[in-house]
Each structure stands twice: as structure tokens, then as C-alpha cells.
Length: 132
Image (cartoon, rainbow, N blue to C red; front, top):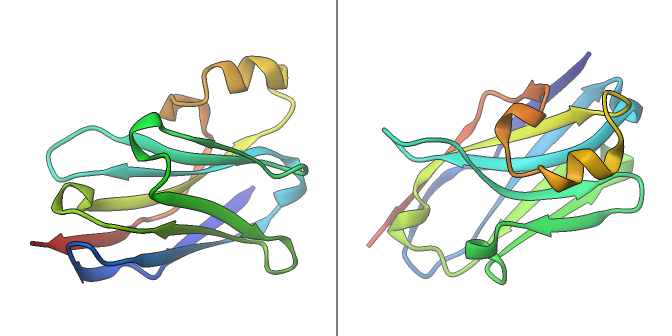
């Protein structure tokens, strides 16, 4: 079992920055990937970025590359998402997610990493609101 707890969401003006966090606990050594997703009100959930332990390889949704940065502090078991040049379209609930290793070959997972169904554990989310 893995538990994920997000924090750091809030309100920010357009053009600003925000950094959100996700603390992981439990069997974190079993993970193939950790990721950030977001879900605007009334819309579907979309991936933002993912990171592959233990090498730390990073993957980004094409539309967000260059503005958002995923990172981690392994000593603290914490995943971060630095969000820059925010726009009102970035307003959403942001979720931390994790995928368990070993359920499929890693190449198969990363071929399809954008799909939320690939992830087995989810946090409760943290709201980010960007005002114009």
C-alpha cells in the first residue's frame, strides 16, 4: 500500500508561480512511476508530468513542457510540481498518482503513461486557482 498526500495549492494571479508537494508513505520502493495529474471542474483528468524511479527520468505532457517542472526529494519521499507562468486555464484540482512496479514491463507502462488508468494510488488532490 502507498499513501499520497498533496499540499501547497492555493490562489495565484495569472503570470505567477506555485509549487505543490506530494508526500508518499508506505511501500514506496515498489513504485514504477509517480506523476501529477490535474482535473478542471467539469472536465476529465489529464496527466501533467511523471517521474520514473530510481533514475529520475522525467516526462511531460507536450502542452505543459517548459512551464511545469516535476522533481523529487528522495530523502523526504516527496514529489514536487513547480508551476510557472500560470494562466486561468491551469485552474484545476491537482492530484498526485503512483504506479506499482512489476504489474507489466516498464517499457509497456511508459508507452502508455498518459493514461490515468495506469496508476494505482491517488492522493486526495490540492486545488490550484489562477485568477486573471
